[in-house]
Image (tube, rainbow, N blue to C red; front, side, top):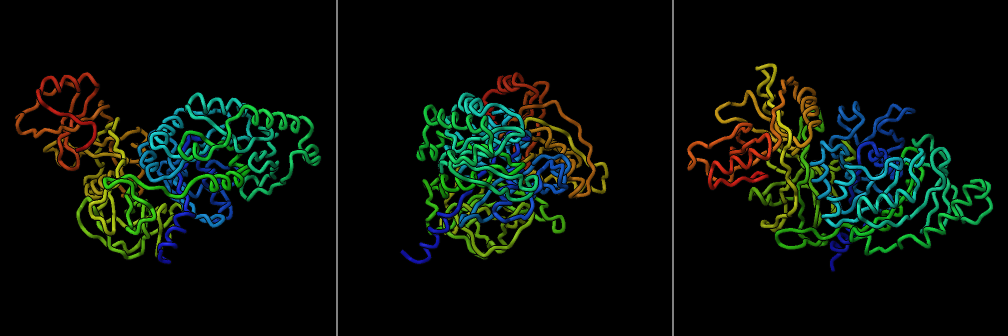
Length: 532
């Protein structure tokens, strides 16, 4: 085995690539921020809704995210911790941006599921969990906000098992809750870990550790808390699920951690245990079978495109998940779908919107490459195998539609450019009525909040004010047949015939009844729920 291969294997072994998922406001972005704090990537953390600090979370880089206190775009963060190279994919929690989250999960090897201790498992958490479950990726649970009054820890474990249908194994256990939350008992190390306030969560929390039987903890905790801790630990040892690494890595058992991202209580023990338990990048499914990350052929796939991350340069960045081989700056690769060779000359890595040009990267890493308009979500890049294609990047049919036009006819060029570039990010789809021109376009989105983001970004990034009129459609179908043989379609009411960006015929429907009616009236017509 050559020295180069050894280097590749070692680099793959130390990589961990995971997504953080949760219902909105469970503390996901704050937890991401604290990982960066402990990894030394930032010196002071600012939570999304911090009262004591005017800083905003590093991972929320869009201005609208800072104003609304929510994440509306996935962000990619890389940092080093204890010789691990960590890639975090911070995803939007809001359901209106779920298609971005679903695609991002395709680039992750495992997931951290954040649960609010007061609310338990919520609707969006359940949806995102199911995506992880379908992929069979390991799911680690962090029960957050233990510094606030919430549900009993045993009740939270029961909630996870009943609602999500996955067994749980607590790795640590909370000592107190609300204002009495003192720290955790680390079951793996069999030790008590008490924390100070970490400067209200802005600095690394210092801990006091030791054996549960040590008299000093009885004094620090008080008799009642100490006695309850002893009882809880005994009950867990008798009745709880045992730790089983294989079952965890198969996505059938979730390790559970308790803590508070806001105060940093339990963050470092969680990060250390997570890195120890989870695995490095695994083989990826493709049309040629599973691709080993240690293979010498460089390959990866595009899972996200983001326009205008740098306002000064109006650039477009394609996010590439590396799946195999070593990436080197300036290398020439095959763009499989376009059947052409391209040179990757300015690869970048990220801490939110801050980026650096890199010389090399390895499987598990997420890199940004300049996109002159040639990439689509799901595209495969491969150095030596021009027929390799990674599979399983999902597409989503819009459920909300609006007619959009520019207020100022002189801004038409910027209007079309802005809509086109934002649609290529995958968050929205553009349709137009045949023979209507480009002055007025129809936009389809999965969640209605996307319309607000669209209006904001067109104004801020392209200088375009728009008029937006909602349309009464909630279903879309692509027509597979050649329409010329029909002459004119027999269209029921509450439908609209449009074209997508590739001039494919598409029908918008007001309800499912009209879908059946159109099929019955036009014998032999074939409708599909995704673009062809």
